[in-house]
Length: 109
Image 1 (tube, rainbow, N blue to C red):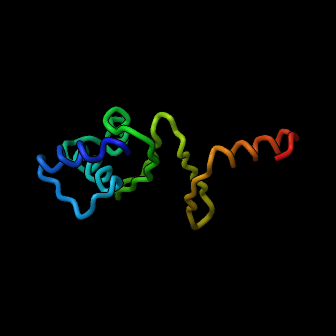
Image 2 (cartoon, rainbow, N blue to C red):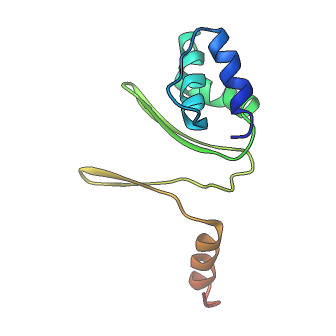
Image 3 (cartoon, one colour):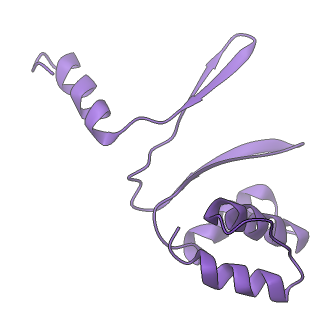
């Protein structure tokens, strides 16, 4: 995320505190601030597409559900696989996805 320093300053002015200089903590505080203002998780994630800059993939959970968000360029894709009694989270690269597609099409790896 490229605008985390500016967002951190804005969120500090709104009363949020931070323990690290990590951009992921800023993203979590941003989403929390949006939900504190009354937005649902889904609406907060939608709003973040306009407010957050850079490359990111987030998996966010609340007691009411979860969401997965990728930046508009989506160079860090997220994949969720659900299996009985467990959930598996992982990320794959574009190269890995392209290689699997070529193999399925009979074009080799």
